[in-house]
Length: 403
Image 1: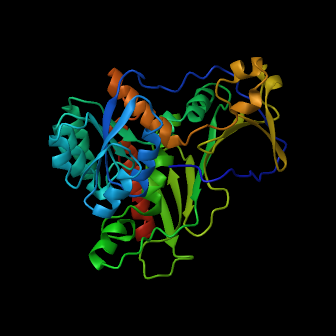
Image 2: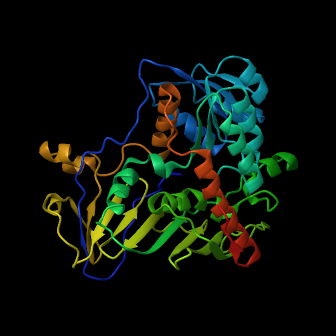
Image 3: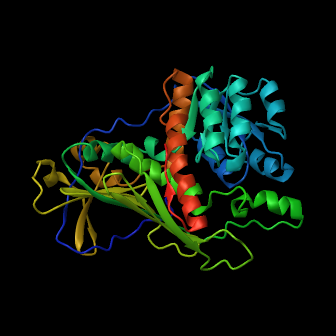
């Protein structure tokens, strides 16, 4: 998931934001002398995005593009010089052309594709969410236990350098007692791809098919819910939700605007909103504590200290940014080094989208034999929360969450 735009924070109160200035060291890059041969399975929008980021990694070579749709496969090949095209996963795996795969097929197909790749012994990256049912997620988890290669989930927050840095402060006394959490994903788009052939139109628009889709709360929310799970080490136990069509009255049955409340056992909540009808403030997660709040926007992050929070010394070196009534200070990677060079402002924001860092972690893990940044076990838990949130929206009834 990518952040679509910078956003403004509109909040009242005399908050003073706090800078974070440790060394980063959070990006794992693969051995540049190696050349992991990667096949991308699924050449739709996300698959093409993966192709674009893989070409930036010197430790990876895009060796194959696989898609059952000929037009999409050819589109993917145009983005990957020297790659070979396949319309069958089994043909690609038996060709001997790939050491690893990145799966970006429709969510409901992930289990079958992943199991075939895992059984073939190649390193496997599965785009998030993991699959569209808890049963299928567990099939992937079971297959991964006997895998010869690395099996990773593409929940991107765990690889994001800004998110890694902010997490070290969240898990210290800087934020302190958790008050509440909020997240949103707002992007004005349709989720519909036109096609003249009815069968192709149905295949391309699987996210609008109520029989298989996880809707906004599952397809988008899973990535964001996992950030909260990773930070807190806990999972909500129930969720309520609602959804409606606010813009795209084109015969679809899947809501284009949703709202959910996810509740923890101790009463803490996540308020989640998503819409295809408006883009204001884009995508972010917010964690409020009694000492500070942390706001994460995928390419940027800020920490806002309460006026009565103890001073820790590094605040004086902060790069400050005004947010309406509040003064925010950015979470900057390698801030100490940049400050010593007089280049602190140059470190604001990530140079690449979050997807790049998730793929870099996967390629590094596959190349060096490391553990993945996000295991499929953790992805199954996050997806279970996303599935329950979607079911709450679709049914209008509270759903219990079991992870």
